[in-house]
Length: 418
Image (cartoon, rainbow, N blue to C red; front, side, top):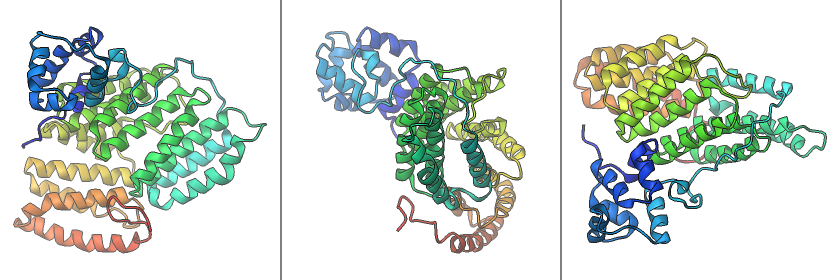
């Protein structure tokens, strides 16, 4: 399977925990940084272009004949490769996620009414999808939560409630196919979480931003958001499931750009965290359990072309999904069918595919519809095989019914509702 030449930003994302990069940056030895990039497949032409220097000057830096000295060039290197500013002694760069400020997380009493609302929305979302619930969550925020943010008798916990529900609105917008709107919700949720010093919730929002960045094709941004989330999480109480979520997001971002060793290392950290003894519970964080980790592991291993290992995780994910989690089960089955196709096992792909078509056509998830379309494109080159051809015919019948039932929320891919 051929891959595009590596983007230097993606390579740097995979090296942020590497002592060689950290030492080179601390010593402001840009020649070593350039050699690390070149050794991982980034051409000298691309390196030179990213920092606006000639290849001759680049070779001088790489061979130790001269060193970078000018502040403007350090800034260009940081911005061109997405090296966090503090590693080079620079101010935080405009593209970096916000930094943790070193305060301890406040121990806030949960807001009982809003926790109940959150639970009701979450349970409904698992069954019906975000497309049907987005408007209800936004109305709740506007009518019930927003007035309390400016009420002088409200405590700081109302900011955490607003952050959690705003983040949920972002996920429902994403599930509705409205990624730009989802990004705006996540951007609003983060300062709301940070206002009362709720660092675990801020870390959770960063994990959501990481997921969205990856879905929109920005793997380097996804890795940066995951790292920011880990920094936020360190400011608060130890919550192993939160660390597992963030390391998984980091692994997904790195696997998407074939950074195999760093991706597997991050996935190992996620598994270790999830197996750790229970830490502090947090009322606003969404669950991240063995089923979720298996689902994400399957995607990580698939992107690394480790299909046999991915198959084991995908099968485990399907087996662990509760019957009441309609969307999660559908997404896990989509992943499993895709892995069977990539392994060349078309009979198994068709078998699981028929199970997938039992998903309720009223599930209001544009995300599922788009992934089903991607699955159809993956199967179409194999339609000369009779079982695949028959399956695709049934798939088209189901798709037409689904599109009719979801016509009020379906938008063109990448578009916004009219």
